[in-house]
Image (tube, rainbow, N blue to C red; front, side):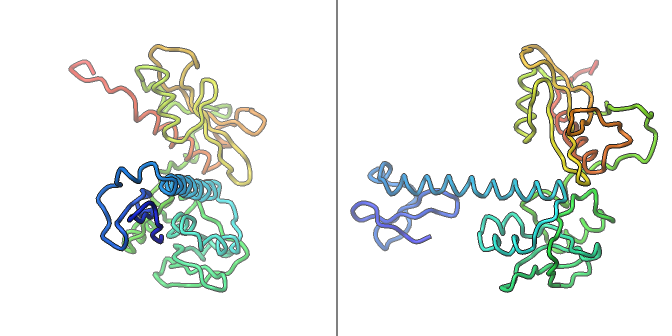
Length: 286
């Protein structure tokens, strides 16, 4: 960003770290902002711009994450239009995408001037994709995920959106009772307070509604909400994680046998993340 005049003898700019930096006219950048500039209108304007850019960057990452979790088709033209925005390209770069053919899978590296996606495929070749839409698949839907992860490591792939290295749970093929609607693999995690458990849920990005931590997933075109019991809302004593269950759009319990692969993985991921913050007993009787 260009240097702007602010006060007598000073220039300011918004640094790469999002903070306002200053220098004397044409001189070297100062280590800190001079007192004379701290309340300057131009400094305040740059601070607010930096805060907006941070929010914009977070919103771009959240949107790409939502596309990926739900494996929604995204118009190629839309990706091409937003790519010129650094926040969008940073969120999208190196995300695995799939074109019209399931074999058209690769890591998005760039967008050409005519709107084609430049992708490094799983053979290591750079190819152009021009389908009407692409999907950003949830990793549980990718065949040979371990091989894809190994290949990504060889390429030095780093993703702003957690996709390839996202923790996944594969739904067991069978073993469910016909009427079963709850999983208790991560039930019983004890917390000093219900407030602490709810705070952990929100810090991980999950919604707290009533006595539950929840996350919504669009799986195969069907909206499903995973829920983990975390305790009565106004209870101020010890609390613990309960069972994990899923509900459809009308709030009806979904049988485990009918839970889709993405909804299963994301529900288990939430339950495991909550359980990981439990109080660990120490000592001989732990």
